[in-house]
Image (cartoon, rainbow, N blue to C red):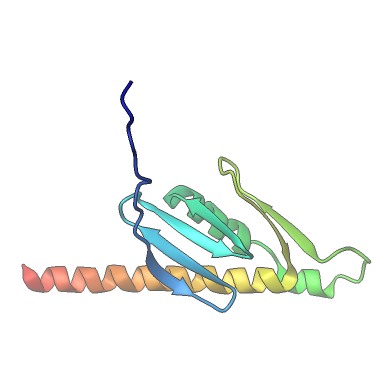
Length: 122
């Protein structure tokens, strides 16, 4: 019998955006993003991160704050076809929304810069 030693695959992360409460990293090798938020590192492909963005943006924070009923101010964010679920307080929702907004601004800025540089090189 032969002993085979395998190494864990090395994954290189490029930080896309960071706030005080979380970070978003991009892995070009795996074609995905990793979100580190509320102590949880979760992997998302393009479709899943767009669904997460839509779910977080759909939460009406103002309505939750103005709600006079005695209900816990928690929101459960679950995305279909994704293994990750977040249980967030109102402040965490605001922070998560800020993290996602910054991330998509940075991704759009990167695309614009890439387009301009590519045009100049032609």
